[in-house]
Length: 312
Ligand code: GLN
Image 1 (cartoon, rainbow, N blue to C red):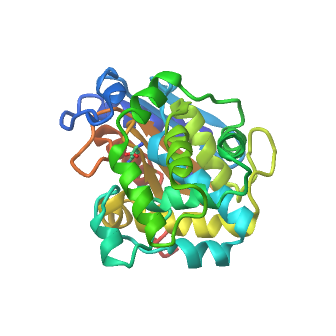
Image 2 (image 1 turned 90 degrees about the vertical axis):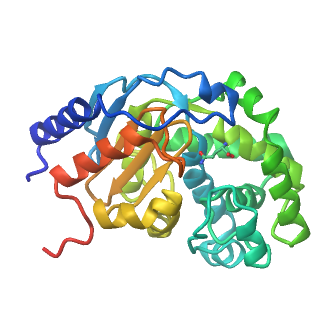
């Protein structure tokens, strides 16, 4: 299938139409705000590596970025400490366990293994060069904004909902500290991580963030260099290994593209050099991935024949 504008728009429209009635899953309930979001919202978007935008459905509705933020904090921390030190401190292997697993730490001497699970994301936030929480937060927010190409904002409502219920993550932060894998005050890292999860993006923003990776680290809409080209393969590799948690292998098998999900209902996949596909729908499967979001992104990727593992 050719990647012309008409074919891409047709694939986006079909993925929205065909999956809008898909039932199953439930909004995340452990973060009160997320439980309250309208479950019927559904957006699909593609942004190409040239910056063309295609969308269908509720693609302008703004939702909580949640775990997809881990990808952009990875970029910031890797750029700050260098990819070798980042790899050595955090690791790059799938945990094979849920995103907030404590057992994963116990099994691996308190090393987080992946920057895309809660432990590794808090460890990454602690590696960002900063003097204090506010500077750490500003640098992470500015990175998200550069990827999105606009001034996305923290939602005080989402942040309050998370900061007053994130006791499990605070425990993980202290475990990391006791194991020598926290590089700032652990509660500061947990606070900043919680804020990075609480920014609001639209499905179009999410696709733009992914398109910046598809274009090798240059935002194709603003033409700003956001991350060095040599860091992008590390990010895409990690998204392949852990981006959809314990469904990452299934995603590689069926879709064949690096991806990332968040419990806000966002799903993102990147076809390097070509485009990024994003979808949003709040109901999640038991792993924590959006049911309609995954179906829509997978359908676009399959229809446009984008699997990286396809032998030309
Ligand atoms: N803020 C959420 C948490 O820490 C993000 C989890 C997710 O999106 N998978 O639990």
